[in-house]
Image (cartoon, rainbow, N blue to C red; front, side, top):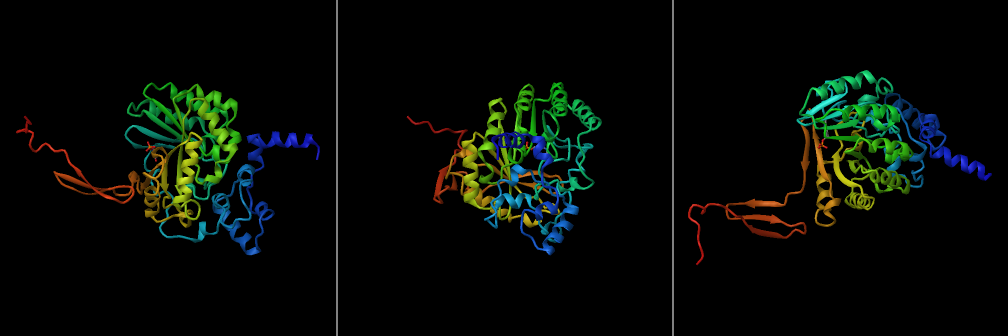
Length: 376
Ligand SMILES: *Cc1c(COP(=O)(O)O)cnc(C)c1O
């Protein structure tokens, strides 16, 4: 191979449009790369009819084929369980559609809204909480629809925080993304903009110099991404995050707790420590929602509490995310953590320390305030 070929290939590999054009999007393509029986192929064809496959060459390059339980492969490679394993999953357990004030805009909490600006992603995560949006094909950005969202936000002064999500908003080209940011920036009561994207993890090539110089004009922007396993923190993805952070845009991480992928205290602690080493702040660990098509990846809720128990006190407090369960029906996020308070009275509280010691803590109380004891 000539070095020219290698240079060209390197250029192509670094081009995000090339990554998308060369994504794996059919079972036939997968069958050419992974040994599968006819029955397995047929099962996956049936699966991907409902839940299509899309994997960037970059993300696929992280798969370790020697590992039958590879955590990268499990997040991108379809499984027949998506259509055969069913307990209680529904399409929209968080009732996002009901909380939509205009199409694509979810206003659930008093002071912040969630904008769904596209249903397209670089990669179709098998555990996607918005799998319902996959039906009916890929729907890109519509200027009319976001204009309606701006109108709502403009007329709702309580909204001071706008989460731009999808799909993946970084699937928009820079011009369309800038259209959104510029219009949000014009609304005086919008104090911060957040971008929810998995591009740094599945398509770090998307984080171009041009993109970052555009984004920095609209600060304060906070970027939330989703690393689920330490293997995903590659030098390439760390470089992409570093570029964002260097532009004054903090990167926070929201992991999803996934069976057989990261439902392990050691894996999660390692992930969070490595995130901190990359200047990324672990923000949330989400309990996997009861979404139809993802139930085979759900874990018991106590797994998340066990993970926090193994981190709090044992490692940097900055590394400890908040474990949350999103309440079905649109109740919002509920934080869960191990119990450290055993009992309390006016005189004492009884605590458990992170090492399991029981301690008594005097409770300052104002029972005697009317008649203070003055020491002579
Ligand atoms: C998660 C979420 C937010 C943001 O919540 P924070 O706890 O502020 O990160 C906003 N709107 C909706 C609908 C959400 O699900």
